[in-house]
Length: 150
Image 1 (cartoon, rainbow, N blue to C red):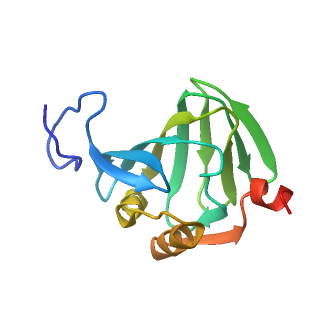
Image 2 (image 1 turned 90 degrees about the horizontal axis):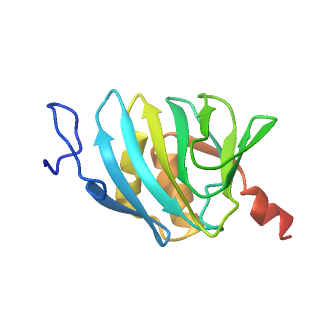
């Protein structure tokens, strides 16, 4: 099994293989990264979700592997468990909420690039905001969980 994550040539990854990255205290595994596509697997807990944001350069999809999540996409709200698939088109504000103890999911983005944001290993909301903005995302509001706590 190859350990690379770029897609310049064929490769295969074992279930837990890929480039280990960090988002707060959670595990992010980069599965593929190229100019055409980025794929990461994330396992997050409640409170580690991104703020409401918008991508101007890429479309994003989430596929839930384990756990329960809700998704805010523009004015629409969806809920999903294992097998759910949600589209976040570019230029539409979005975020998601972990509704279970944790959730594991795939993030797919085209074109590729923003998956490399996790290489900055943000550990605080301020670090995350800087990382997101460095990769072309615009933060519009805090995560709804943070807004509800006020």
